[in-house]
Length: 214
Ligand SMILES: CCC[C@@H]1OCC(CO)=C1C(=O)O
Image (cartoon, rainbow, N blue to C red; front, side):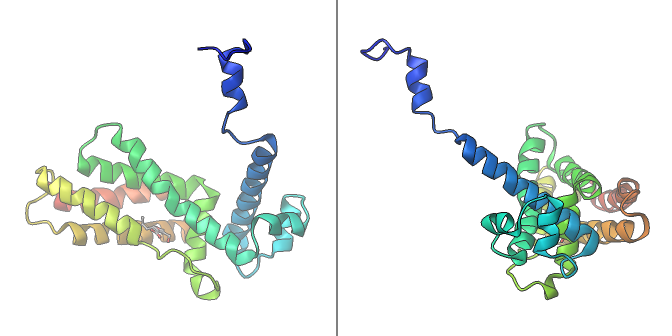
Protein backbone atom coordinates (compact mmCIF):
# COMPACT_ATOMS: atom_id res chain seq x y z
CA UNK A 1 0.00 0.00 0.00
CA UNK A 2 1.07 3.63 -0.59
CA UNK A 3 3.23 5.26 2.12
CA UNK A 4 1.27 7.22 4.81
CA UNK A 5 2.22 10.65 3.39
CA UNK A 6 0.61 9.80 0.04
CA UNK A 7 3.94 9.66 -1.85
CA UNK A 8 3.28 7.45 -4.90
CA UNK A 9 4.78 3.99 -4.29
CA UNK A 10 7.08 4.22 -7.33
CA UNK A 11 8.77 7.36 -5.87
CA UNK A 12 9.55 5.47 -2.69
CA UNK A 13 10.94 2.57 -4.74
CA UNK A 14 13.01 5.02 -6.83
CA UNK A 15 14.38 6.52 -3.60
CA UNK A 16 15.50 3.07 -2.43
CA UNK A 17 16.79 2.13 -5.90
CA UNK A 18 20.08 0.23 -5.72
CA UNK A 19 21.23 1.20 -9.27
CA UNK A 20 24.55 2.98 -9.92
CA UNK A 21 24.78 6.72 -9.35
CA UNK A 22 25.66 9.01 -12.34
CA UNK A 23 29.19 9.25 -10.91
CA UNK A 24 29.49 5.45 -10.79
CA UNK A 25 28.15 5.22 -14.36
CA UNK A 26 30.76 7.72 -15.54
CA UNK A 27 33.58 5.89 -13.75
CA UNK A 28 32.49 2.58 -15.32
CA UNK A 29 32.44 4.17 -18.78
CA UNK A 30 35.91 5.65 -18.26
CA UNK A 31 37.28 2.33 -17.05
CA UNK A 32 35.86 0.61 -20.13
CA UNK A 33 37.37 3.26 -22.43
CA UNK A 34 40.77 2.79 -20.80
CA UNK A 35 40.55 -1.01 -21.19
CA UNK A 36 39.61 -0.76 -24.87
CA UNK A 37 42.43 1.72 -25.55
CA UNK A 38 44.92 -0.57 -23.81
CA UNK A 39 43.62 -3.54 -25.83
CA UNK A 40 44.02 -1.62 -29.11
CA UNK A 41 47.63 -0.79 -28.20
CA UNK A 42 48.46 -4.29 -26.89
CA UNK A 43 46.94 -5.88 -30.01
CA UNK A 44 48.93 -3.62 -32.36
CA UNK A 45 52.21 -3.01 -30.56
CA UNK A 46 52.35 -5.74 -27.93
CA UNK A 47 52.84 -5.46 -24.17
CA UNK A 48 56.45 -4.30 -24.05
CA UNK A 49 56.01 -1.49 -26.60
CA UNK A 50 52.90 -0.11 -24.90
CA UNK A 51 53.15 2.33 -21.98
CA UNK A 52 50.54 3.67 -19.58
CA UNK A 53 51.36 7.06 -21.11
CA UNK A 54 50.37 5.70 -24.55
CA UNK A 55 47.06 4.48 -23.10
CA UNK A 56 46.38 7.82 -21.39
CA UNK A 57 47.12 9.76 -24.57
CA UNK A 58 44.84 7.47 -26.60
CA UNK A 59 41.86 8.22 -24.36
CA UNK A 60 42.92 11.86 -23.86
CA UNK A 61 43.20 11.46 -20.12
CA UNK A 62 46.02 11.96 -17.63
CA UNK A 63 48.17 9.02 -16.49
CA UNK A 64 46.62 9.62 -13.08
CA UNK A 65 43.16 8.94 -14.50
CA UNK A 66 44.40 5.61 -15.87
CA UNK A 67 46.14 4.71 -12.59
CA UNK A 68 42.86 5.44 -10.77
CA UNK A 69 41.37 2.41 -12.50
CA UNK A 70 44.46 0.22 -13.09
CA UNK A 71 47.52 0.48 -10.79
CA UNK A 72 49.98 -0.48 -13.54
CA UNK A 73 50.39 -1.82 -17.08
CA UNK A 74 50.36 -5.41 -15.84
CA UNK A 75 46.91 -4.85 -14.29
CA UNK A 76 45.70 -3.66 -17.69
CA UNK A 77 47.04 -6.84 -19.30
CA UNK A 78 45.35 -9.04 -16.69
CA UNK A 79 42.05 -7.19 -17.19
CA UNK A 80 42.25 -7.63 -20.98
CA UNK A 81 42.92 -11.39 -20.70
CA UNK A 82 40.24 -11.83 -18.03
CA UNK A 83 37.79 -10.08 -20.38
CA UNK A 84 38.57 -12.76 -23.00
CA UNK A 85 37.77 -15.63 -20.68
CA UNK A 86 34.70 -13.97 -19.18
CA UNK A 87 33.03 -14.03 -22.61
CA UNK A 88 32.69 -17.78 -23.02
CA UNK A 89 30.31 -18.67 -20.13
CA UNK A 90 27.98 -15.85 -21.25
CA UNK A 91 28.17 -17.09 -24.84
CA UNK A 92 27.45 -20.67 -23.73
CA UNK A 93 24.41 -19.47 -21.78
CA UNK A 94 23.12 -17.61 -24.86
CA UNK A 95 23.66 -20.60 -27.16
CA UNK A 96 22.09 -23.06 -24.72
CA UNK A 97 18.87 -21.00 -24.87
CA UNK A 98 18.67 -22.09 -28.52
CA UNK A 99 18.11 -25.70 -27.40
CA UNK A 100 20.75 -27.14 -29.75
CA UNK A 101 22.34 -30.56 -29.29
CA UNK A 102 25.58 -30.74 -27.29
CA UNK A 103 27.62 -31.32 -30.45
CA UNK A 104 26.00 -28.36 -32.24
CA UNK A 105 26.55 -26.22 -29.13
CA UNK A 106 30.27 -27.06 -29.17
CA UNK A 107 30.55 -26.23 -32.87
CA UNK A 108 28.58 -22.97 -32.56
CA UNK A 109 30.64 -21.91 -29.52
CA UNK A 110 33.79 -22.15 -31.61
CA UNK A 111 32.10 -20.55 -34.66
CA UNK A 112 31.27 -17.56 -32.46
CA UNK A 113 34.79 -17.59 -31.01
CA UNK A 114 36.15 -17.29 -34.56
CA UNK A 115 34.00 -14.18 -35.10
CA UNK A 116 35.19 -12.74 -31.77
CA UNK A 117 38.83 -13.30 -32.73
CA UNK A 118 38.12 -11.53 -36.04
CA UNK A 119 36.12 -8.59 -34.70
CA UNK A 120 36.83 -7.99 -30.99
CA UNK A 121 40.05 -6.07 -30.32
CA UNK A 122 40.04 -7.12 -26.64
CA UNK A 123 40.01 -10.79 -27.72
CA UNK A 124 42.78 -10.09 -30.25
CA UNK A 125 44.85 -8.31 -27.58
CA UNK A 126 44.30 -11.14 -25.08
CA UNK A 127 45.53 -13.73 -27.61
CA UNK A 128 48.71 -11.69 -28.20
CA UNK A 129 49.25 -11.11 -24.45
CA UNK A 130 48.96 -14.85 -23.82
CA UNK A 131 51.82 -15.39 -26.30
CA UNK A 132 53.85 -12.65 -24.54
CA UNK A 133 53.10 -13.97 -21.03
CA UNK A 134 56.82 -14.73 -20.29
CA UNK A 135 57.44 -10.95 -20.48
CA UNK A 136 54.47 -9.97 -18.31
CA UNK A 137 55.15 -9.99 -14.58
CA UNK A 138 51.57 -10.78 -13.54
CA UNK A 139 49.39 -13.84 -12.94
CA UNK A 140 47.56 -14.23 -16.26
CA UNK A 141 44.86 -16.91 -16.47
CA UNK A 142 46.25 -20.22 -17.80
CA UNK A 143 45.38 -20.36 -21.48
CA UNK A 144 43.41 -23.08 -23.28
CA UNK A 145 42.26 -24.95 -20.14
CA UNK A 146 38.84 -23.24 -19.92
CA UNK A 147 38.03 -24.12 -23.49
CA UNK A 148 39.32 -27.68 -23.15
CA UNK A 149 37.16 -28.27 -20.06
CA UNK A 150 34.08 -26.69 -21.66
CA UNK A 151 34.44 -28.76 -24.84
CA UNK A 152 35.18 -31.95 -22.87
CA UNK A 153 31.89 -31.52 -21.01
CA UNK A 154 29.93 -30.81 -24.20
CA UNK A 155 31.50 -33.75 -26.08
CA UNK A 156 30.90 -36.12 -23.15
CA UNK A 157 27.22 -35.17 -23.30
CA UNK A 158 27.28 -35.52 -27.11
CA UNK A 159 28.64 -39.05 -26.73
CA UNK A 160 25.98 -39.90 -24.16
CA UNK A 161 23.34 -38.50 -26.53
CA UNK A 162 24.68 -40.66 -29.37
CA UNK A 163 25.80 -37.68 -31.51
CA UNK A 164 29.46 -38.77 -31.63
CA UNK A 165 31.06 -42.21 -31.85
CA UNK A 166 30.82 -44.21 -28.61
CA UNK A 167 34.58 -44.87 -28.65
CA UNK A 168 35.43 -41.13 -28.82
CA UNK A 169 37.56 -39.86 -25.94
CA UNK A 170 35.86 -36.50 -25.20
CA UNK A 171 38.96 -34.99 -23.53
CA UNK A 172 41.20 -36.00 -26.45
CA UNK A 173 38.68 -34.63 -28.97
CA UNK A 174 38.41 -31.41 -26.94
CA UNK A 175 42.19 -31.00 -26.93
CA UNK A 176 42.26 -31.55 -30.70
CA UNK A 177 39.53 -28.94 -31.26
CA UNK A 178 41.31 -26.37 -29.04
CA UNK A 179 44.66 -27.05 -30.71
CA UNK A 180 43.06 -26.87 -34.14
CA UNK A 181 41.26 -23.63 -33.32
CA UNK A 182 44.29 -22.02 -31.66
CA UNK A 183 46.65 -22.94 -34.48
CA UNK A 184 44.13 -21.89 -37.12
CA UNK A 185 43.51 -18.47 -35.54
CA UNK A 186 47.24 -17.90 -35.11
CA UNK A 187 48.06 -18.73 -38.75
CA UNK A 188 45.11 -16.66 -40.00
CA UNK A 189 46.35 -13.75 -37.86
CA UNK A 190 49.96 -13.98 -39.14
CA UNK A 191 49.04 -14.44 -42.81
CA UNK A 192 45.75 -12.51 -43.16
CA UNK A 193 45.22 -10.47 -39.96
CA UNK A 194 42.38 -12.97 -39.33
CA UNK A 195 40.42 -11.73 -42.39
CA UNK A 196 39.94 -15.36 -43.50
CA UNK A 197 39.46 -16.89 -40.04
CA UNK A 198 35.83 -17.94 -40.60
CA UNK A 199 36.68 -19.95 -43.73
CA UNK A 200 39.84 -21.42 -42.19
CA UNK A 201 37.93 -22.38 -39.03
CA UNK A 202 35.14 -24.07 -41.01
CA UNK A 203 37.74 -26.26 -42.75
CA UNK A 204 39.26 -27.35 -39.42
CA UNK A 205 35.85 -27.75 -37.77
CA UNK A 206 34.35 -29.84 -40.58
CA UNK A 207 37.38 -32.18 -40.66
CA UNK A 208 37.52 -32.69 -36.89
CA UNK A 209 33.76 -32.97 -36.33
CA UNK A 210 33.33 -35.41 -39.24
CA UNK A 211 36.02 -37.61 -37.63
CA UNK A 212 33.98 -38.02 -34.43
CA UNK A 213 30.34 -37.63 -35.56
CA UNK A 214 28.29 -40.83 -35.05
C1 LIG B 1 39.63 -21.81 -28.45
C2 LIG B 1 41.08 -22.14 -28.58
C3 LIG B 1 41.96 -21.51 -27.54
C4 LIG B 1 41.98 -20.01 -27.63
O1 LIG B 1 42.62 -19.58 -28.84
C5 LIG B 1 43.41 -18.43 -28.57
C6 LIG B 1 43.53 -18.36 -27.10
C7 LIG B 1 44.36 -17.31 -26.46
O2 LIG B 1 45.18 -17.82 -25.49
C8 LIG B 1 42.75 -19.33 -26.54
C9 LIG B 1 42.66 -19.68 -25.11
O3 LIG B 1 43.50 -19.20 -24.33
O4 LIG B 1 41.72 -20.47 -24.76
